Image (cartoon, rainbow over all chains, first blue to last red; front, side, top):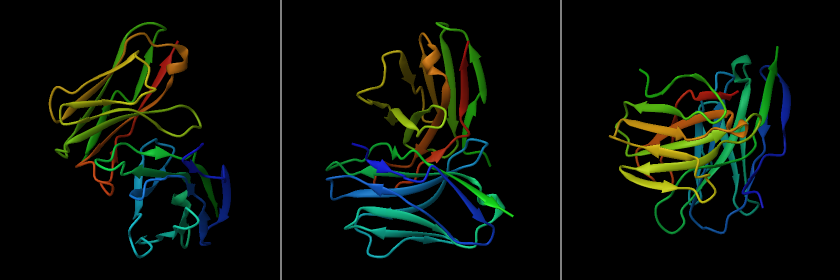
Length: 117
Length: 114
């Protein structure tokens, strides 16, 4: 079973609109971290936002916010006031605690976001 | 300002000819990772080093090896590249391996196998 599911392969959004990118996850570990990364066509993965499984509040970073619904195992990324430069692939990723040190990230398949003028 | 550097950005190799990809970091992070990202797919972790301790993912083919001679450098060696190994190879670092330790990625090396 997939650990990270991103159901939107591609999205077109008008500039200045808000956009929500969906992410659901699957884990039995009570300790985990959820990340969103942006990957422009240049290839570099850029960290956007982090949410810990025990964090009481939803994470926010500038125009990015994370709608964390733990019971539903979802961690949707919300981008407010979208800009042309937001056009990129967006990946949701998870790191599990595994009872001790955490290892690498498990990524979803990504959503290709295109912002239209 | 470069933090995670990968060389070369583009690499072409022949089927079966060994190739080495390199990664260096100026962050002095303890952990270095290698991910493989095939076209239109999610990045997949191959292995990582915590300092000099090597951690291989269970499904990483034996054809892939790695070396970390010091804190700053990490190499990915593909002993006999096949056509299926054509991909973007991403190097990443993190300070530690706690849950909230962000991973910093390099720009990647795009490998073509002819």
